[in-house]
Length: 187
Image (cartoon, one colour):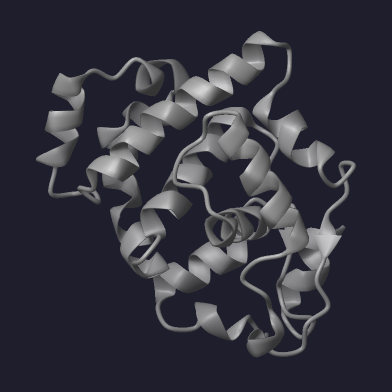
């Protein structure tokens, strides 16, 4: 069984690759959670984030949108002292702003999921790459979504972060064509 090479380093990376990465996601809270994990990954290894994912879930109230959107300065300080997560004030503030932006979107009758999937007409963008070096880190799609999210008040969402997020939530299938998951998540 052949996997994408990036996933072969550890058991937790293989598990993530084999069960989560690239699987189309449609539920707002899970999309928000994945967005926040990708934002926290910026500048770090994905392995670091996976190792801390349970601590993130606990610290951020299971990424419940309404709770995170109402965080106060006191909660920010609590998160800044939590050694189990990434203690970056800008990323913590982004979690709050992004939860608020999703709730504002919902108030207009648009779910975060419908919003994201509308950029691809509900269809997965399928990459056909043979080698990891061919897989891009940004695209016209991630540029457009990043720009639009910024207009809607989202923070810490550059094109590279958004591209990684789109891969993670299955909007873009960048499993290599030699990987057993390429066909599985395409169906």
